[in-house]
Length: 135
Image 1 (tube, one colour):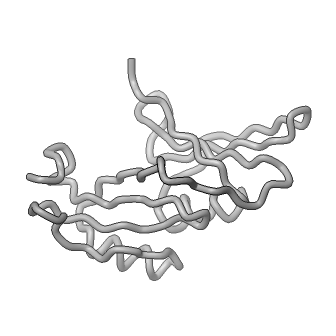
Image 2 (cartoon, one colour):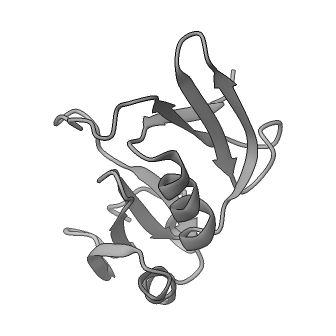
């Protein structure tokens, strides 16, 4: 088994595509529309779906916002330099909600950004990405 994708419901599909491609540097891998059930999907990622996990953006026609609830945590992305990535995200119009710095109780450098729908995205320096946050 392997992880295929994470699905996020979005209120404005083009706004979300713009964020994930222009701000986070992903690319649109494929899209599909279902007129019978009134939804559109866009799959975005850094690699093809055959090579790694991606994000499925789901827009249910006529729904422009969702209650994110308190069960959702975040998506994590590995980056070479968290501080520089925060600067790039900010310059591209993204929202940095926690600046680069060590995780509480550890030394791993992390930061958090938020997508246009309020979903949290954690940035973790690649040199620590596989070691757990307390390392």
